Length: 329
Image (cartoon, rainbow, N blue to C red; front, side):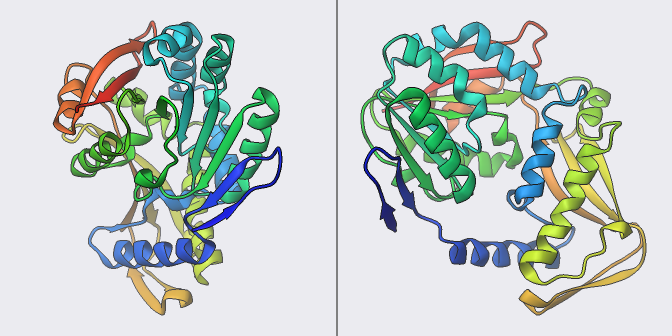
């Protein structure tokens, strides 16, 4: 672990170096592309181009998730802050931190904001967000370059914390993976801490598919960009023109699946892995699942992972849910 700090600047801890990140990518991609069905973990979507494309997705008319979550925060931020009674906001998978400004403004307005902790895998984006928030709020900002799948126990412990895990990112995990991750949240938080969890709710399958296969083709470009990420990072020769984007509603598992469909019999080489894979015409690579939740079932899932639901808020249309939960002690 490397630690860097400068006077009047955010404290930055680097838990995942570029070398470690590359090693994790190699392990993930090798396992995913040699398995059946083939897959690529969605964590590798987010190079600079991928991040910009996802930002465009959040503004699309079909992609209701960001608007719904933001409407809940605008309407209920004061109530959330009062219920959490925290003086520290810990944002998990922070990115640009744009989505948490409403919460931070409410905490600052209530005189409760003493410090901010940010955790993200992208050091460049994290440092920019930390500097911006430090200037905006004039409080201590502690930025941690790390992976929330492994580094939650290493986050700094200070004050009474509200951990924000928003955007329905929890939906990118299978039920067993969610159970493990939610359990890690509970065991890593201290007494009096809380978790603010954003979850997308089950709704009409056609509407869900349109949210992940928009008419402008932005989500398709985002999905195909992961092939360019692998080409760049692992010396691959994927030809994105030989793949198409597909979004499918899996009603059995209550999740959207994003897939890349091979349009030809083809062989792809990843020299950085010394790996060659064959794809049949029509064969699919799974790149993301996005689980949708039922409001009555989520408290049971949280309780099974050692988290006690405290209060919940939804938007007027019932599309999205924010839940404040606390670790059982």
